[in-house]
Length: 80
Image 1 (cartoon, rainbow, N blue to C red):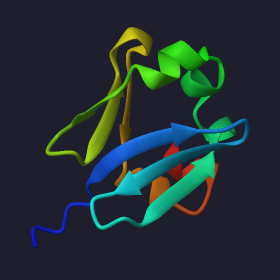
Image 2 (cartoon, rainbow, N blue to C red; image 1 turned 135 degrees about the vertical axis):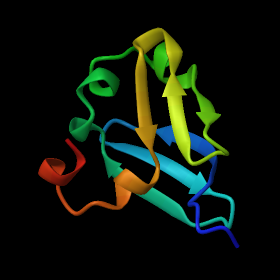
Image 3 (spheres, rainbow, N blue to C red; image 1 turned 60 degrees about the vertical axis):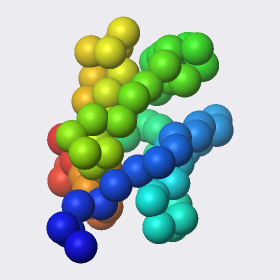
């Protein structure tokens, strides 16, 4: 194992960003933590792709990138 936390699916609800990992665990964080995502339309949110060997997520139209590992931080201050 190379140590990278890799995603395979992204889902949203009104409060959370959910990322399903390759090992089927799910990481959920408040969408409030990510202003560009919070302000995006559902269509924009669904327009993502995995980058960096599936360890990151890119929303090209929003010019926003997110490291999946950063979702494991314990607070918004640590993510920013």
